[in-house]
Image 1 (cartoon, rainbow, N blue to C red):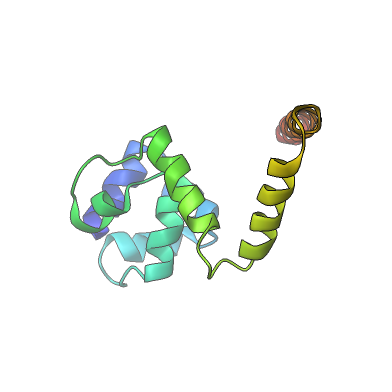
Image 2: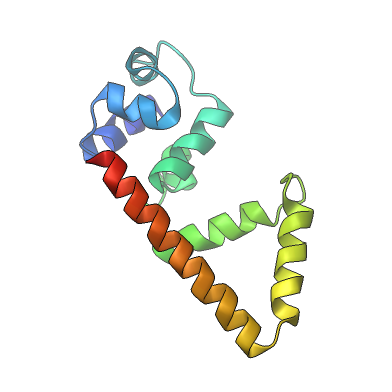
Length: 130
């Protein structure tokens, strides 16, 4: 996996420091993982795959494509959200049931509100990056 980690990082055109920041570790930690001086933990595998949209089968076994398709990514996220070990599992189910019980106008209002909120967050993040 250490060589695939290196290959992934190079494909993403990130240095070790920037790659590590996205995962909450130092560039030196990434260097040790790439060199095989440290084992890649289960948590690190999951973090890498989630953060960079990487296929777990590719990362673990070099099977299939490096990156998940959009459909696979959505499927993977939904699967994680609906895993009973997710601490937000009950809340997510309640939100889904509540939304489903709304009439068409109520659902439209929620969708419009969510789209507006996402737009405002993106604009705020863009201003912070500038």
